[in-house]
Image: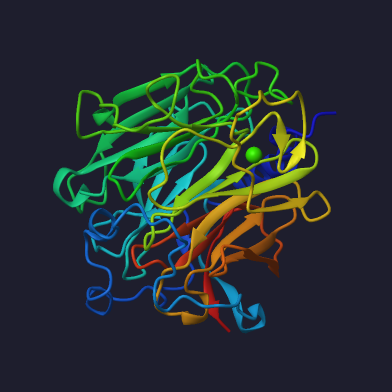
Length: 422
Ligand SMILES: [Ca+2]
């Protein structure tokens, strides 16, 4: 039996359906979010243009922003506090980069809810369930990214599988600051045919360079039967990078990798959540393994395009199939764990908030199957500390962050949680 993600998620889907059948369709805020700093608190350290302005690129040595911790924190002093509940298969959380303090929760079947900062009940921001195909466990509305200048242009971007199972990258818009987007505003940027229901990737996020990065899995089945990971003739198994401001519907940035023009990095199996450290531009990718090894990949901020993360020559740092051609440079994971600790990695974020100084600079990630949450921290000499910090009962479908860098956890069975002091 293949241990692809779709099989593993079977139980999760069943539970999700049960919950949906039992309860109301409208999520609720459980705790008003005192955890969310007010705008006035946050402004000095998190101006609206942080993402665009922060980063001097090309830093060769690992950069440690002042205030970064040197050791992973003692997790006994912290917990994941419930913020909101009742969502139907929530799969992502993000913010709108407009200093509104709002959070946006993505439901896999195709809805996005907005949580106001004042703790009021969630409101429906967008419903595209009629366009989204979510029959397969890895299909659905999978990713959401607000334009860094959303406050001016009202643009946001989604990554979903359509009713045929193919990937659609599309732009939508709302009145900036509005709590309701226009479902008729869709402008499709890219369609990618999907040969199998699983391994659709699904994340998308703007880098500090202002370009939109898009994750696509290897197309599915098991073991990468089409050789997509190492093929430069397909968007599958890739991290793509496009310039949504430079063309119609987009332009190709200079410095992308080899092969199809959108390819920025390759050799990925099914990257399930990647993120950029907002202080350094460092890239972290959680790449789901085949049968044995779950991995976290890393590229320092300012890295050139063209990185090859090894799949399917390697699963994690372990040979999987075939022999790489001589002279090929592979980027191996900075952390991995075997299936004694879980079975499907969920990449997360580097903590850049202000409420929990002991976490500054720590990358949090987790496992969907086991509920484990791990911390990862780079030492000044470039080596890494990596440890399991929390054992939860959550189906960790994603992490999320607010505009101030506070970290949230999305439980696919319906709840949103925030990393808090006990
Ligand atoms: Ca790899």
